[in-house]
Image (cartoon, rainbow, N blue to C red):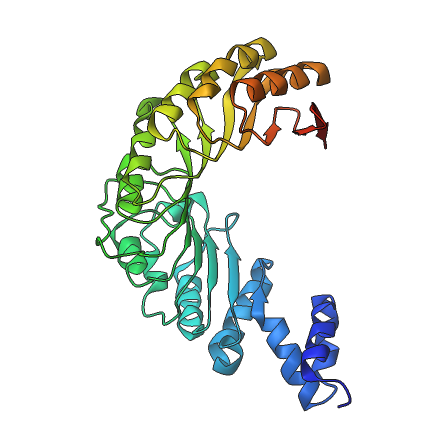
Length: 328
């Protein structure tokens, strides 16, 4: 082979995955390189292809050892026990796995399914799942000390979810969708988390924000999904009260409609943030381009550290030559 293997691998990485199977049959050198690329990242596949892939990973451990990232998305399928057992057997073979995402249907998310992660030897860096938050999931997380990014999309139940204090020592980013205070507290307490995404439900008030102070490091990045009609002049002071040194704040309000005047009147409240650089506020707002420019100017005046602002129209506002302009 005239070209170094590294160059050939780089070239093959630019090929669509559908073009790699013929490459496998060229010679042994091409086969080895193409196999590494083909199995390194396994994306979300249609259910039939997903089953075939899992069977292959069970049957050929040498191929399974090449997998670094696996995505399973069965949100639109109610899965039978045999398929869960197949997934468990495949996961046990993925010794080099670093990124794993397992999304299940709403029906299956209410079941105790975390046993699918039992007896796995991999050490994850990133883990996303919709499996419900219960004791079985907590026990699995305790076997994964290298996770730095965790996303729990599962339901919180009355089942205990208690993590050992020494679990997840490298966790820096945590996202939760349905989790309330009990799960948030267990994950954040004493861990070096700097980035958090959480949901605010009307019945919980602002108590989920209290859990942000449990991290062993100051929270720098916060994303809030608000499912009630709390106005910004109420929400922003609650955030600033707990983490005034926040660097990035992203707020998505799903259940309320605001006028641009409400956002303008919220400007003075941003002065409570001492180092806020990036601010996003997405909600149902009827506003023009000029309205959003005025909001950006007022917000920056109140909080001079702001570098970029994203408002409901989705445009990114930033200062250039002393004037706030936008792109997008």
